[in-house]
Image (cartoon, rainbow over all chains, first blue to last red):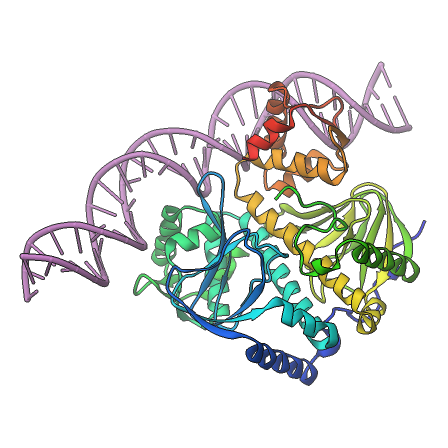
Length: 230
Length: 230
DNA sequence: CGACCATTTGATATGGATCAAGCGATGTGG
DNA sequence: CCACATCGCTTGATCCATATCAAATGGTCG
């Protein structure tokens, strides 16, 4: 019988691999200016819908300013949030031709809107663009995978991991403002608002975080947070 | 949500949709024979590892015969299964340069192993291949998204949805054999084996399914199952 | 047949949900 | 500038779905 050991020898072969360093930077920059030229900037008010569940996915989006959530309303009326998007994130990639989630603006949001067909046509001729599209999808996949792993943990672990993720994505070392409400956090983590509140109070009482205002978070003991998610 | 099937069935509405009909069929076939020529068939014994967590992802895989699971062991020792793969599914696409999940054979499995670098080189010159790679990643993303939505439902809903998904993916109308154990099902659905067992007993007592043997499932009342997941 | 492992079934415990009330910040009209 | 309404959040009491612990059953393979 064949064994599998011989299989894993070569250097990594991920799509983006030969784009390391300057090459990757170039492609990223090129891609960004491309879509900036192809797209239109739009302003969405707090709470307004960017696209709806089951709508054809004719566009994709790059967030300039603000915050966006994608979500689905379940049969029992609960809302499950799929992802949060922060400045410079690209979204609307989470699915195929028809959106399976809806997206709306959590805060006032400046969004670059790009027509898919034009970008797709471009990808037909430009390998770098095609590669980039693939990479974006792949990152979205990574994120979704992490979300699955998050949802099987207990409440303390979910909240701790969420706070570390937010700090990271907001480039904050210790202190940041959550762009979303407690209800949003609850719907993302698959918990209730009461549980979120209790866990935060507990973390505050344990001197692991501080909450100077309702939206502001100070990470006082990052190691303790990391230990929580172990 | 339940309509998603194996990687090879194109969900309605994907970006590649302008490849409808003969064009897509051609591409799919071309791609399949391409990778068959590029890859090597290997046999994995029941329970043997196909790739490990944190190994470089140098290959991807097409399952010929058997069943495969990808999973991650959590800090507390629990095992979370990310996906099951069935014949003709392509896997090893669930991430970037390094695997974030491990994969092993649930049953004896015949697997076509393809070197990523060779396929990637091909994609550089062949749009159809590049498109195909994107599509595969995108399907994986769809599946992961469904998994997130599954994990926030209650035990009955999760099990009902799982059974419908399996029937669909195994192309079974009423009757099929589960390739995986109760423990696997539990680890996929984020439940315990006892809960799986109790829900199955309940579904059997309600004449919604029958379980003639431990692995065999007969769907006696599909509508009731669908109603359960509403 | 006997041993072993997977599954089922039963009894009890518990984490997080639910229901309910209180609180604090923000805004509005008088 | 204050009284009051509103909304988002916190806190408390209780409940319930699922986990956990434990034992019985069944299926498989020597």
